Amino acid sequence: MLVDSHCHIDFSDFHHDRATVLHQAASAGVKQIVVPGITSRYWSRVLSLTGEFCGVKLYPALGLHPFFLTEHKKSDIDLLDQYLKHFQGQVRAVGEIGLDFARKTDKDAQLEYFEAQLDLAEKYQLPVILHVVKAHEQVLAILKQRPGLAGIVHSYSGSAAQAKQYIKQGFLLGVGGVITWPKSDKKRDMFAKLPLESLVLETDSPDMSPANIKGERNTPDQVVTVLDALAAVRPESADEIAKTTTDNANQLLGLGQVCLL
Ligand SMILES: [Zn+2]
Image 1 (cartoon, rainbow, N blue to C red):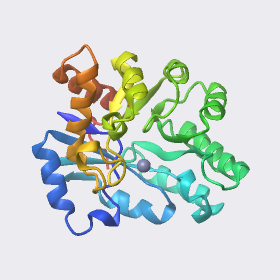
Image 2: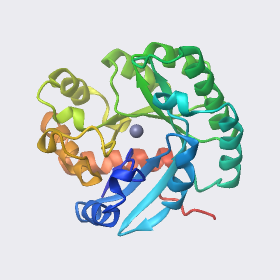
Image 3: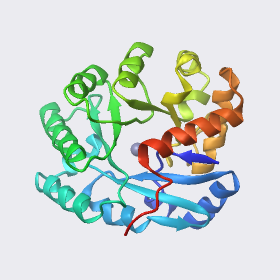
Image 4: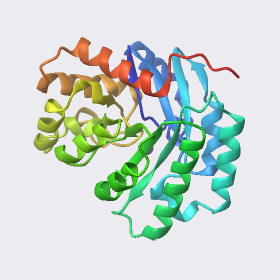
């Protein structure tokens, strides 16, 4: 069994064939999918996709994504607080949140939303799903001040040295379609050497398509492609990688636990 630890199955890209996509994922062995929210507008849709659909269990995360900074309002933080309180036990993480310094938006505002959401993760004792682009040093410095936090650095793009610091902080690193791209030799080499207990698989569908479907919409069944690419460079078998990465995600996000609501 496999987990897609990061999949935007709620996006309109899937409105016309979501059931088919989920059936295909289930047939490929991808039986659990984590669906992160990106703006407050998306949260109710993400929550409506909680539960079992077409043989796949969907788990919501709620957050304000730094890429969409201009869509967020200060009042969204209070709203997120209310959502997390009301849907306790159902929401598995605060995400996706983080810093994206490749964007030409206000860095201070990004930091403000990020810190406020980390406060909420601590308040509700939830893991976080991080989107970090060109800001790993800043994020690591912030996490060092918050030793109680754990989570996933999704689509991990930092160095091997930074990876070790995240792991020390109790974070897992998301491996996705990038590992299949021809130019990703350095990344493959890094993921080959990191401890398997610190990795989770993801697709980031509909984005980050692996090389075999370049330019097309990405789908959660492609976790298998990511798994095969990782197995090609690691000492463990594909079965062992599947089992360990699934266990890693389950343990962090409590996916095995039944929702109390
Ligand atoms: Zn994402």
